[in-house]
Length: 155
Image (cartoon, rainbow, N blue to C red; front, side, top):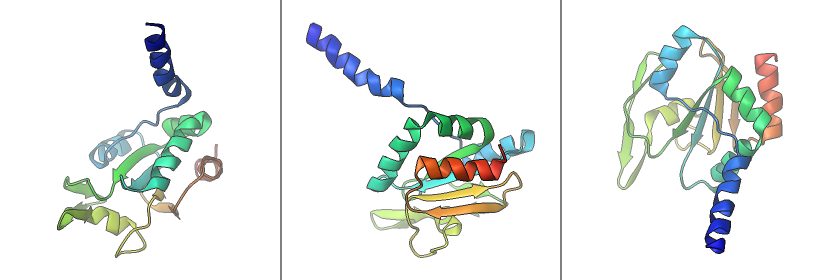
């Protein structure tokens, strides 16, 4: 029994140390922007991307960055190669493009500067009017993200 309690404790300790970013969807964003306009962070990733997983873990460990995002931004976590839903964004409709056993969402291609194959992770920050204010391919360390978010939001 003692070993079981220790095991449970060790399983839940990481949960206590990590903060949680509130995520939304593109359909939520349209409604939320009408009610309370805020800048938007779009994080494009894939489930096979090791850097994406490490980055996500590091970001959730940074409580001040998570708090800053939750308080001042809308955040959309977008799995570029598994999301198959039709998405309406900025007045356009985007669909999933299957390619054999895999595929990619048209929106991932539209948001990426590399139209053939996006670089993951990909971070896009839009102002409250949905205009691009920052574009970042590859790892976005929490310290650098915090600095950029402070610049954008003028906090």
